[in-house]
Amino acid sequence: GNSVTQMEGPVTLSEEAFLTINCTYTATGYPSLFWYVQYPGEGLQLLLKATKADDKGSNKGFEATYRKETTSFHLEKGSVQVSDSAVYFCALRGDGGTSYGKLTFGQGTILTVHP
Amino acid sequence: DTAVSQTPKYLVTQMGNDKSIKCEQNLGHDTMYWYKQDSKKFLKIMFSYNNKELIINETVPNRFSPKSPDKAHLNLHINSLELGDSAVYFCASSQDLTSQETQYFGPGTRLLVL
Image (cartoon, rainbow over all chains, first blue to last red; front, side, top):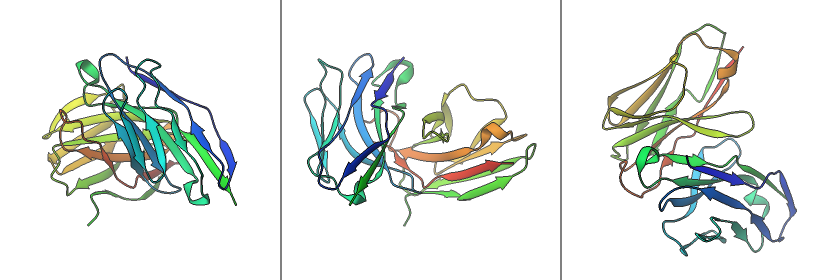
């Protein structure tokens, strides 16, 4: 079945530091890949997505590139802010078979940014 | 104007009780989902309905029974609550099961079983 593995947290950074959260996946076919963010006390929000190999998703200064050869979708941001403190989830959506339409999430990475 | 809404936001109850969580979406989506997030933030799908029809039913105890009276609503009823049911439950919706569009999540219902 499909699976997503994220780097373990928590991740603690100072403001303006560079952020990378690693994400690798296992899936058959051509899944779509997503990053979701969950701010404290809130539900998940879509941060960015990529639907095919070599696509780059970007939003709010965050970027991730769909790398089929390494089955990865690492999240990066050049300069984090305190307001980026949240839990980040990598996810994939299957393109067929029994996993069709189902989002599979990674375990989440807690990010804390200090002033 | 809330796209996906859930009630209640917080639910504290005793073991053995029966409770329901309601979810409504005003996006005109065909597909709705229930997820469970445990204390370690791990998120797992429980159910998915498409046009009121059950599509995905993960390994969930049969004490959990989803009900979809129409495609805008997907309620979750839980019988004989157990301590391990304590979690945050998220409802979500998407345009349909076949599109590549993303899922929109509700704010979550925080369930605490004492």
